[in-house]
Image 1: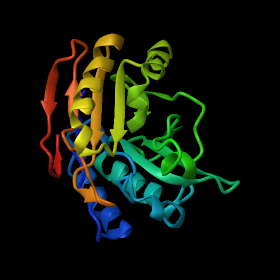
Image 2: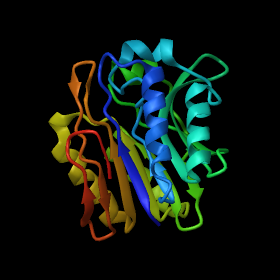
Image 3: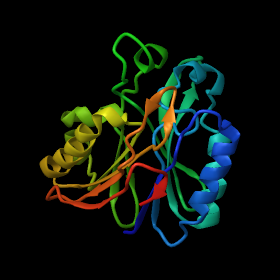
Length: 233
């Protein structure tokens, strides 16, 4: 399986619509891949809490529409990162979307472990309660989002559910980049699975992002690693 991790830069000043358009074009350029992955909350920024309410959207909202067309145009499976989902009852969730090469919604995952304790995401968003796997022709993916990475029992549950490759989308802060590398390698080793870890670049809401997206094999060896800036790994 050939995978492309799009380490998009999320910076203050760019509109969400512009970022969607740019991400869609980057996805279309990955037509020689089987799977394309985007980071967590790349539309608004994982730390841009004040935008969560205004930029929240339903699962079939503008991000889904743009990413569905991009997946279809490229003919790839697309983990479209995550969006701020507004559920029918008005609750907000940090929800990952996976689209088939036909542009159809194949799976969703509502982030279980919210970051922030008594502020930010933990206060503004509701928690998911279900693990998600997605069967591709080459691999079965297990989905996790950012702070989930610190909870090994979630990944063990994904292995028990049949996952062979873990996909971690994140908006991980640069000041904890060493944790990012360490934890992704640990999850790969303890679960004997590949890990595709896609993070944002840039700085948003005053928080510098780590970048350094990774592909790790079951031995914990880093097969590929990005730098700090916007790139495709």
